[in-house]
Amino acid sequence: MLNKKSVDDIQVKGKKVLVRCDFNVPLKDGKITDENRLVAALPTIKKLIADGGKVILCSHLGKPKGEPKPELSLAPVAARLSELLGQTVTFAADPEVVGPNAKAAVEKMQDGDVVLLENTRYRAEETKNGEAFSKDLASLCDVFVNDAFGTAHRAHCSNVGVTQFVDTAAVGYLMQKEIDFLGNAVENPVRPFVAILGGAKVADKLNVISNLLEKCDTLIIGGGMAYTFLKAQGKEIGQSLVDDTKLNYCKEMIYKAKSLGKELLLPVDTVITKEFPNPIDAPIEVSEVSSDAIPADMSGMDIGSKTAELYANAVKSAKTVVWNGPMGVFENPILAKGTIAVAKALAETDATTIIGGGDSAAAVNQLGFGAQMSHISTGGGASLEFLEGKELPGVAAANDK
Image (cartoon, rainbow, N blue to C red; front, top):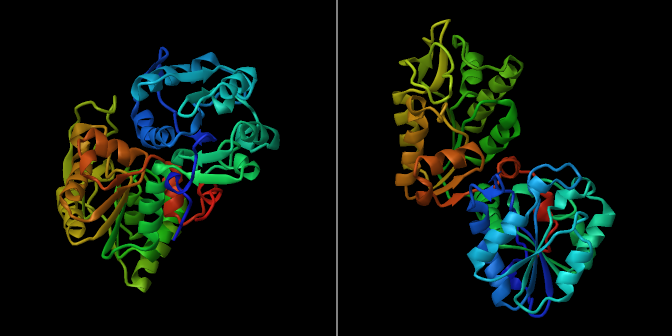
């Protein structure tokens, strides 16, 4: 079990607290188009303000590649955060991030004040975890709090390097929730534990499949990667997406499931089309066939209705469900039925339901089932690595309780 110091375990009154947030929000013409990540960061920020800390926020935004790019400045984030918090968030506009503006702003802080630093990736060392920038960040604070799960699988200055030069490093509420659900639910699940994996490529989920087979009772496979499994079973898959270099791997996983006594569910029927919809949401003609009867000139694009029912039934008796990756091309309403069926089954169960970030999080939210899930992860790559059973540098760097 991961047992890390959280914001509830530290005293911050009168102290300068550097908080690594995930403010990597989409911007259009300098306006924030989706502020979910800002809203998600508020509980940790408000807690530190209420406890009398001097709250210094930092984050990356996009990929400026180690140089200042005005269109990737965090200035719009400071403005919006001021509105959301109902108090001024002072923006320190230093191209070197920790420069004269940041130092002067921090120097002036009273208890409960908030300062936001410029985009941490304006510094080339950030992504290389260079010591100089880590020391610059640490020089501003007494305490460090990491609340950015989205970058927890990377060792950068602002989430890992800085912890070597501060006495206290804790996690915020967002990180704590990810550790509780994704980390500990997978390591110590309430059973039966059902894992559902989808998405396009087997290659992206190799280690996840292998690790989850050891942990879960039932593993369900959908999405584009199911066709490589079906081909590995000797089925004809027509023009469906396939990774021929992974056929042996899929055979090994089918054998591994058998030898461990785990149930591995693959699609029994599939929704097929002549070609990929263009644009992606365009109306398209589809038909439904058995998984071993896909015509040579057709492609599988979604799980069929019998499969949707099979997967939904498998979820009904579960106590813990982890889902990562859609069942089909969910961006197209006609090819979203499989993903909707699985989302609906998760929404209706009493089980603990955990959605790994990325496309499955987007699908669940877009389809309107978000509020009915126990936990929707904020990290795509980070949640996958957690499900692989890997240690995440950003989590490991926090002090143990």
